[in-house]
Length: 401
Image (tube, rainbow, N blue to C red):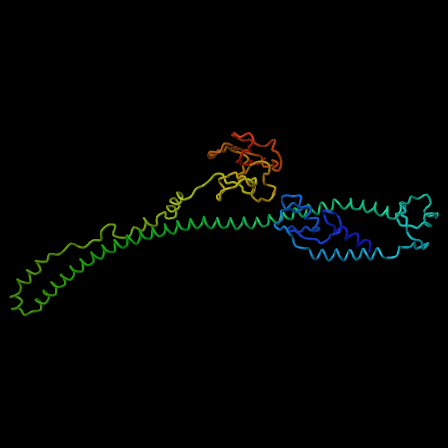
């Protein structure tokens, strides 16, 4: 039972007063404190934050931790019962165990102390020994509690990272959709323009063919009428035929044979003009609608005070730091962001627009450079720094070292 009580003291002690919780309340970060202790702590602070993890609390009157309160009350009752129990007696001499043998590491009575078994041994009063050993065990426990708190802080950071991953994915997906929508709109417009050109040419050339066909149809009708009248003369009696012969000949001679109709050059749809190198021509036209940057910045390396443009080609410094996880790639002590791709050889050049900024720097940095501390080596940069008390905004490409 003593082991159970001691475990309760470990698990259910307030981080502020180090005593068993009294009317415990819980913060949004899951840490619990005595209500009175927390109010006293906050009365000395400007910001209501967790005394353990320093996370800011949005509530000035946090809710009660009822489950913890019930457990603490049960523990208090157990302590009260333990204090009312009769003293433990020595199994050998039926005397109260008032001493603790330091050599045998066990409670003994005064008779045991004077026996041969404990001759020349060292003893302490049972309460003093218990207090000493409790203090030692608490000291051993402190690294574990510190480690637990550290792990809890890491868990909070990882929870934020998990949320950020979702936000990054959703934001990236949205930007991809927007980019493809622009390309799609361009292609739809280009498709409509080219189909309109085909249909326009079809309309013009179809109208021309319709006119030609109508003219030819009239010629055919006239020829057919002449042929019909002449053939009717040929079927007449000889006397009637001879009477009308001169008229029939004159009718034929008055309609000279027209030239054979010919299809003009270019009368058909110029399919080659519309389909020839269609994909290439559209792509060439599309090149004027899009841009390509030789350097794409890596958002995950940006110092939290830097804000990147949606296309990851422009970096701007802002006074307020954004929420960013402490991932291994990220710089923390320098206003720095890396290019997303590095290099290990060759000759490279870039044009960097620094605008009207008084302070700026651009250069290269080794991939193995420490990003959470001051950079002493492994970095080369070209810098302009007017303000002596102002960090430079650094755009860098990393090279593999």
